[in-house]
Length: 179
Image (tube, rainbow, N blue to C red; front, side):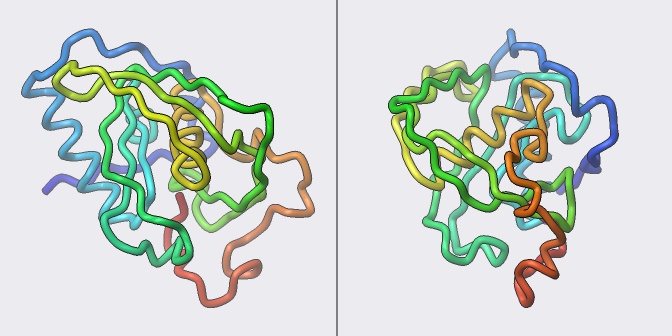
C-alpha cells in the first residue's frame, strides 16, 4: 500500500495541462493506479487525478463503493479508471452544487457543472470507455477532468459568498480532507 502526497493549491504543477497516456497495460501504469486508489481511499476522496500527486499524465480515478462520510447524501458512483478523457455536455443546463478538493483541503464552494455529459476515453488496458451520466457522477468526472487541464474548482466559482471553510459551512461533516 503506497499513499502518495497530494499537492495543494498554490503548487504550480496543478496548473499544467497533463500529457496523454501513450502506453497502456504497463507495470508502471498499474502501480500508479494502485497508488492512486490507495491515496484516494486514505483521504476519503470521491476522485483523484494523476496531476494531484505530481504525475503529469491524463489519468483520473473516481468512484465510491460505499457511502462517503464527506458526501453522505451522494449516490454511489462506480469505481472507474479513465485515461485520456474527453467530455461532451449533452445539454446546456448546469447544476450548482457544493464541491471540495483534496488539493484545496478544508474548503468548499458552489460550482456550476453540466448536469448531463458523455465521457469517453480508455481504461488501463487501452479498452475504450463511453459513458453517459448525470448528477453527482457527472460532477465528479468534470471535477477530475479539470485537474487534467490545470483548473481547480475555485477557478469555476461564480459567487464567492458561497465559498468557505467546510467546518463553518457544514458543522459535523467530516472535513479532514476534501475532494
